Image 1 (tube, rainbow, N blue to C red):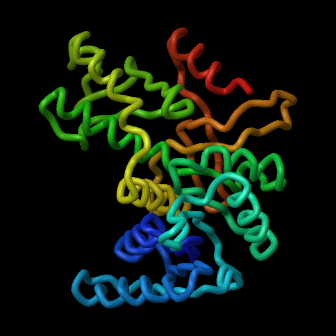
Image 2 (cartoon, rainbow, N blue to C red; image 1 turned 30 degrees about the vertical axis):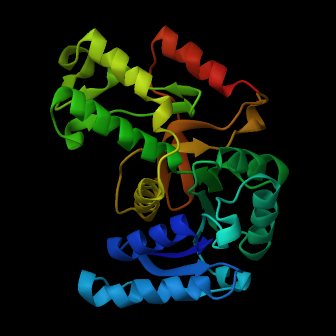
Length: 283
């Protein structure tokens, strides 16, 4: 089991801590936020729910960034400061990630926010974080929303829908519709052309997902890292510049393991989808 620390005790950070505690994936969860005693208060609230909801994972909170030390996985979430309640991103996010790296050189870093695609990219390029140790889970929340929309069109269950999300939301979302399935049937057979066009038109407005969906996506990714799940997760993956080709961070179906990103490759795509993904990856 993983020892997990969450940087930021805002709405997203608190939701992730609660979801992790209930999942049983983590041996312990630490909320870390330098704003007053908010992290400690949210951790206490979660632990008070433990007897009712039947989980035993210890959750603690601190305003000291040194509380990250020893964590095997760091989740970067959102600020707890109500005046600045927002996901860590931009220059502030890069500075924070630099401080995190100084304290936890060997930890994996998961960026859970919808606005943190560039933070993943800058962390790899500017801070030298290995691309296999840094990824973002927000695209999986978008994929879940799209599965729900497909299920509504098909009058079925989202659990029967299998699809993945690639590209850079919201403007360059790539969904390989010809590979998506509903209950084992290809989506192309299950839904007619007008229905597929309606789905395509809904993609951009689904971004950004809300904090509960983002928290669920983060927990799914952490479950894959822990080995409790072997599911592929749609993640923002930092670019690997070792091949000599500089690209942007994009969403790709990703296989995760204890050491981080084991593989992140686009599936076989139609010519149209391949061009769309290549355009999304261009700097």
